[in-house]
Image (cartoon, rainbow, N blue to C red; front, side):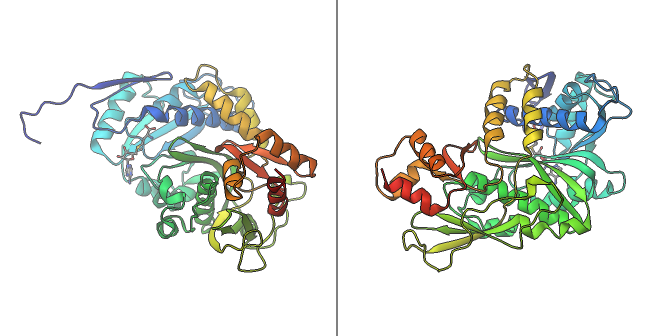
Length: 412
Ligand code: SAM
């Protein structure tokens, strides 16, 4: 840089209990406050469940029995500082970034917030850092990259403890939402489809990708919460060790048959679906109609595109979601939004993958869009279940076969 160009005035950012500064050259996105607030709520619930009655209740104070967190892509350190000051039960946080400028910001922000006891700054390639920590692994790893997170997954699943919490953001929505299926396959190992339910597809492709990385090391995931918001998706999963249980992965993944004519869809599991633990209701999931028997769509004669594999088991853990919902702090800047999103999620049919949208159903058969209430009642009267999804306001998530849904729409 030429010598006579002076440094810009530092930008002051205040969010939650953190005050940070950056010269503006390090990444900071105010829109991600919801992402950070939600992560604080989820990690707090996870930590409380993990530590149970150990007396770590005060945030901002080092807890010897507490958890370790790696924020692998930290930018200004804002997120780590908020974790340190707002989540009780933390022993240590590493705030890492590859950029020297970012680590300069992280170091000065640690001092500014007096959290030297809790946070250590690190300048490393995140993947290298995680490989180095394979033995003394982390309770929580947060991956919040630009775009696609897949290059960080191999090392993340190896450097997380058994039962640890992995938080992953993906912002390359165009790829996940079916604009470039080939690129999606290259990055995520799954073919994306252009469907109305593309936001849930994005979540399920990302979960499938994490599971596939975990499986390589005899590990598997349990999704706690999966959220589509603004321009990104964010998943919160536990990672467990257990080579035997990895054999059940094929029953949690499916190919998607998508009719390009009417947007109907059907799922074909990669393997047999059976509960992997006695009394474990979560692994019993319903698939809408099974794979199509002919190469043409039975509803409109259109042709199918095949996508996936996607994660077709539940994407949320209902009791965990309820606990986050009841324990989230009303002081959070996006508290109302968290309440709204988690309330809808807690009513989602957790065992029914994907959804229709009302206007697309009506548009396909060229009828006036009926009221959502009327369609939902008709589905219930026909003996099936129906819910919204947080990913789309006009969504219809149902275990009714597509044939029944079309019959209802045609009766209008
Ligand atoms: N988590 C931050 C927050 O909530 O404000 C935002 C992180 S920003 C989207 C992504 C950061 O990742 C950038 O600061 C960039 O320098 C860093 N980064 C990119 N590639 C990296 C790598 N291989 N290892 C570590 N950091 C990396």
